[in-house]
Image 1 (cartoon, rainbow, N blue to C red):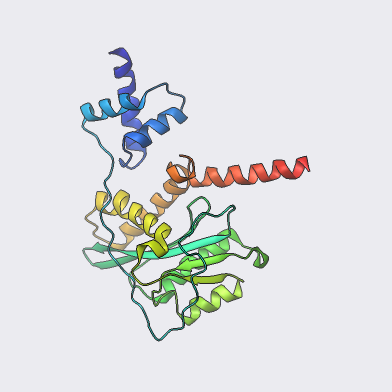
Image 2 (cartoon, rainbow, N blue to C red):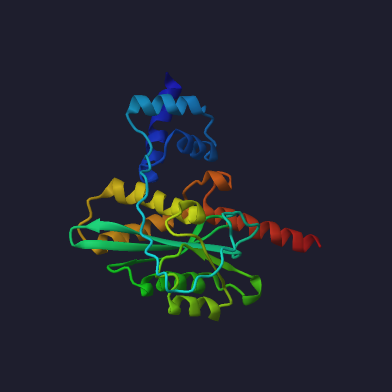
Length: 257
């Protein structure tokens, strides 16, 4: 059919422009955003004919190492990761990547409102300093006011319970919150972002030779994730767009008042 032939290159383009990870639903959503009048079943049928499919996530590995001697903050989140505005809840976690020269460790800080990655860092060692660097980037980028009541949630890993990390949160007026060890539900949002990162970049584009390759790939992925990746939980739009919509609505309400 003529319409099928017209849609094939568009499906291929969207697939290639998005890390070759989008499945039927995401490609259909993106085409609809671009004003293409195409049915989801058509996209699915053509993808099958073209031999392309989205990425499949694997079961995540655990990186949490508990320090039972460290005092532990309370869980102020209780698995409720939906918040009404940005800079109310950040979640943090890190994962690891095998390279030919050893492991690389990747830490993320995510704003729960639109799931935007606001801080990240790649390191050759899983010391407390590298997760602190990710936090510093988030603080510099977002500049949260101490009166906001921002909560920072993580698992009970020793890196996040370190004295330096705890002191830095206190300096910024950020309330610490900690889930339980190795329990993906208690830090589910961060686990989800880690899982997407591993599925969409690490497993798909490996093997990895060098630390620098992982670092550059992470930089590219974070930019794509924040500004172009469609996320179903926030209405099938990118995180940056969701935040922009929030502030635009807030400005409209202020002007109306």
